[in-house]
Image 1: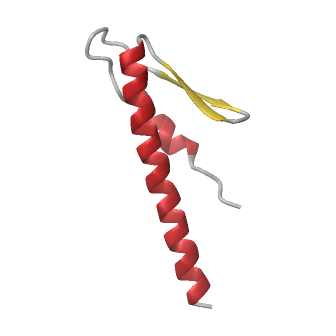
Image 2: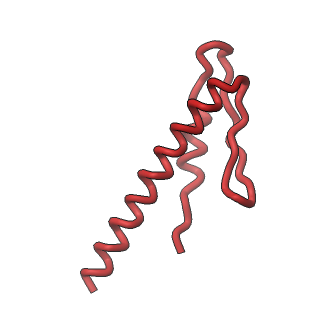
Length: 73
């Protein structure tokens, strides 16, 4: 089964800095996936959108590789 690389998402998210408060967010792995703790809602919403794009890209990479492997057997 597909296992998402949370370390990549964590690194990307925690490298961001809130323009208003100058603080870094915290990436939190949970049983259901992950969460993002941020200093304010606008920053958290921005990070959630960014994390969704990262998850989408990683999923696409996995599916592309899976299809490639499937047809190369």
